[in-house]
Every structure is written in C-alpha cells, then in structure tokens.
Amino acid sequence: MTITLNNRQETFSQQEMSITRIMDEKSFHFKMLIVKLNGILIPRESWPLTFVRDGDRLDIIHLVSGG
Amino acid sequence: MTVIQNITSHLSVKKAGVAGAGGLGSNVAAALVRSGVGHLVIADYDTVTESNLNRQFFFEDQVGRPKVEALRENLLRINSRADVEARSCKITTRNAASLFGSCDVVIEALDSAKEKKWFAEWMIAHFPFKPLIMGSGIAGYGSPETLRVQRSGNLYICGDQKETDEKLVPLLAPRVIMVAMMQANLALELLLKK
Image (cartoon, rainbow over all chains, first blue to last red; front, side):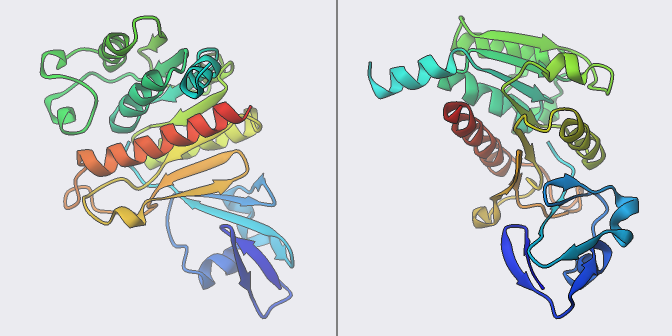
C-alpha cells in the first residue's frame, strides 16, 4: 500500500497495517503524539486496532515541551 | 489604497487567540499587533520572572507582574488602538470556549507537552474548522534549517518537533522567536485568505 504519511508518500509491502505497527516501523516512539487518520483524531487506545489502507492520509505530530 | 493599507484594513477586523504568554505567545502577539490584527485574546496564569527576559517580550521593570497585564501594556505601546483582552487565568476545558470561541485563528503557545496535547485535542473536537497554530520543538541554538511547518488540515505545527533535555538544551531567544514568527506568519496567511 501507498499512504501519505506526514505529507509524504510512503510505500509499505503490506496491504494494511495498524497505526501502532506503522509507528514501530517508522520509529515514532515519543510520548506525546497527536495522530490523525484521514483528518480524524485517533485516540491512543485505538492505535493498535485502527488499520491504515492504500490511499489513506496519516498525520503523526510530536508535541515537545517549551513555549 | 496601497497594498499595506489593504492588508492592515483586512486584519483590523480579525481576532486572534493566543493561549499562553511566554516565549512563543508574547512574541507572536507583538508581531500580530505590529501587522495590524485588530483584536487579540491572550490567556496565561503566570507572572514575569527574570529568567523569562532572555526570550520573552517583557522588560526588567515588569518582573513580578502577571504576564498578560505586562504584555497588554507592551502591545498598547506598539498600537494604542489595538483591542487586547488580557485574561490572567489557567486555560481549562471550562473556559476555553469562552476565551477562544470567537477567534478567527488560535495560536497555541503553552509550555508543557501535556498541556499542548489536551488543548489541541480539545480544539480539534470542539472547533474543528478553526485554524490552530501550534509550536513544538524550539529549544537550543543553531540549526535553523530544522525548523519547519507541518500542515494537517486546520492544524499547523511550527518547530522541529525534537525532544531535548531541558537542562542541557535551554530555551534561547533566536529559535524561540523564529518559531513564534513562523506562527505569526502563518496566522497572517490564514487571516488574509478568508
């Protein structure tokens, strides 16, 4: 599948993958993350059960302290 | 009308919300007032300390005063006709709608990642069509090319999004203010688009 991850095209060999699996593969290992799949906010507890498919848009935003 | 008059007249009827009046918020507010944004709501519960002066838009004689009050005073010195609503309070789920519900654009300038997260999630849930411009990853010095903007629908994130150790990598004026200016610059883009 090919998805848009943080505004970039990314191709994976699998047909579908959970958000957690994509995070593992792309090394998003931070504590404070905001995740949007096709514009919809996905809460942390749903990441393992939410599947990303070809053509989807996934945004993973890392929030860092300091303002 | 000249181009600049046209821009300032457009901005004079706009309202921007600024959540937090620290390094990001105080400098964003100054840039927005200078650009001609007519209405601002700024919320923060903190007071000015000496350690703030290395990057925040405050002055020595304002140490000890509530940040929003001191900031309002400084903003009115730039433009005395600006309408600046200074709210000295902690932003919570109870007051967020009354603070920012009427804003055309909201700038997130809170301190901790935890606060940033709840505020962003709350805004996305309650005001999905309102642009929210966040700051994430502003510490240290150098590497200006790592600063960027991530766009995700009505959510915009300015900064390098890199976690650093607060004790080893302090907050310093140039990077903090650069990210603040990225936020202010995006705010103008969005306000002038509408």
